Image (tube, rainbow over all chains, first blue to last red; front, top):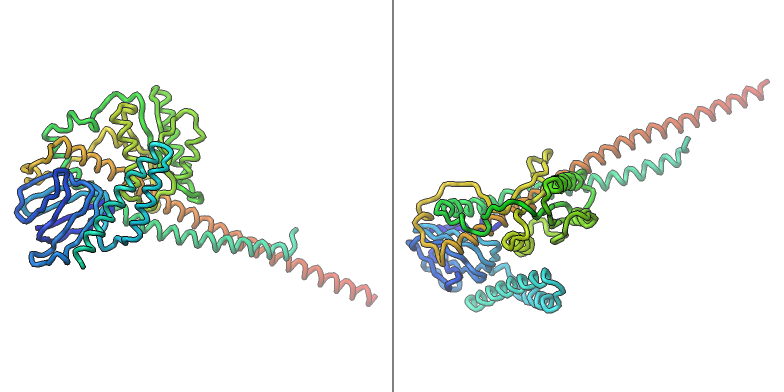
Length: 140
Length: 289
């Protein structure tokens, strides 16, 4: 089936895949070819892509997303997300530092706007860190 | 008349200014190209969102939805997009002019307004105004603002709209038509609107989880964010193309000035030589008599 991962900065993926795992509000769903048509909401988490049926777990691709809309049909999966970072591009130490900074910002926030922004940063970086972590465990 | 030495110094200083403006022109040109390319990438995103919305609207889901609610506009939120830096020609003054027109129109019709300023120059201007409330200021966003940067702006706009603080949200920005043609426009993002597109069979038959309401909420939010993103990118592309043209004019002016000054310097030098010769031959005349 064809997977399209669309962000504001263009299409991250537009190719044939075997399986996609998507974090949704109702829990994680695995989508294989021939899935029932479905439109649902993705929550912050990791999208996992298996490109070929024979691919082992170490060949999976991970994308950290911050929520979006998923559209599944028989031969196609289309995911609209705000941001998608490939697990390979995430540098763990940097993400850790960024998360620490975000938490510090949240604790020292002076007003509502700052707090709101800090919360989003904390969410974003914890998701990225989680994705980097899962990827590392599988690749070992 | 200035001496040749003074003229020489002036020529040198104009030449170095010319070098700077030339460099800025080239930098702006390459940045504009990049912004122009980025300008197109969000198209599939809005396309996909529009498709879903078209279907949901045909099911009547948008009628009762908070983000689609059309009320009589008694107050509105204006989002003004300017630049962070100067030396961009008429970019900021054009945006500000259009923004003032909107404010004056609101004054006439008795509409209250609030403003979110994006860009340092826009926020400087808005801060001086007394007849609008400042709802937020965002400066030094990156050239391609990521989702998290947009979200803060969008959430403010959405919350104000849903809570009834404002009845409409408009963006004042510069539309990038081509590298020599940009136009300041005002577009309404809330209440949400979308262009109807063709809907595939799959979308019609799909199951909506948890329900259409929640999906609609998420899709609409994404469409608005795509609109804001598009406006920001258009603004950037326009900013750089105006900067490029402004810097090209400055470079041309500098070249002209160098030419004029060189001619003047040559004249002065020639004049001095002529005068010296006249004095010498005058002296020879006097001696021979």
